[in-house]
Length: 68
Image (cartoon, rainbow, N blue to C red; front, top):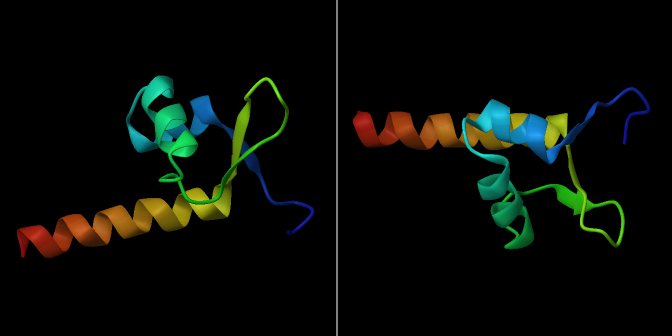
């Protein structure tokens, strides 16, 4: 991991994905939010910005393929 790489909270990731924190947390817990990881026993989640960017690009590609 790059030392300058940004780590996002689940709330930040949810905002960028256009969904609620609860939905993002559910996806992370189910393993469907690739790259998300827990940082403590209380269940706080984080995701690397690069992993989130890949997920967003993947979703955009899937959406464009369905439309075209």
